[in-house]
Image 1 (cartoon, helix red, strand yellow):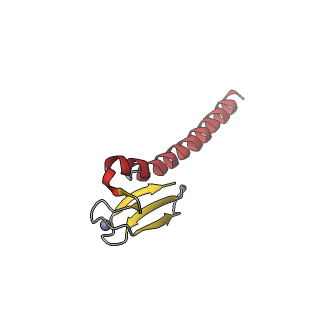
Image 2 (tube, rainbow, N blue to C red; image 1 turned 135 degrees about the vertical axis):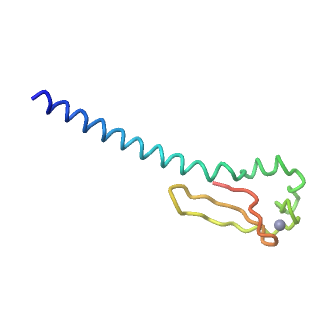
Image 3 (cartoon, protein in one colour; image 1 turned 30 degrees about the horizontal axis):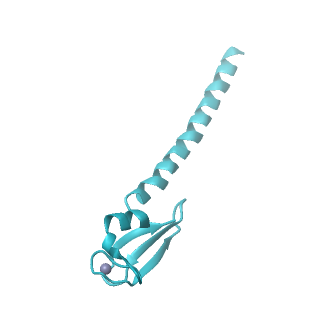
Length: 94
Ligand SMILES: [Zn+2]
C-alpha cells in the first residue's frame, strides 16, 4: 500500500517536472532569437543619424526604403524591419 502511494507521488513529480521543464525550454526559445535584434528605440539610440524627418533610414546605406517582415513561426510573432537596398536586418517591433 505504501509503495503504491510512493509510486503515485513519483509519477506526479515526474509529470510536474515534465510540464514546467517544457515551458522552461519554450521560454528560452521564445526569448533567445529576439534578444539579439535591437528594438526601434535601441536602434535609434545606437544610430541617432538614422532618424530623419522622412522616417527611419538604413544605418549601412542610408536608404529610407525599409520593409516589414512578419515572422510568425514559433510561439512569438516577431516583426523585423529589413533594408530594401542592402537587405540588412535593422530592428524589430512587436
Ligand atoms: Zn541599407
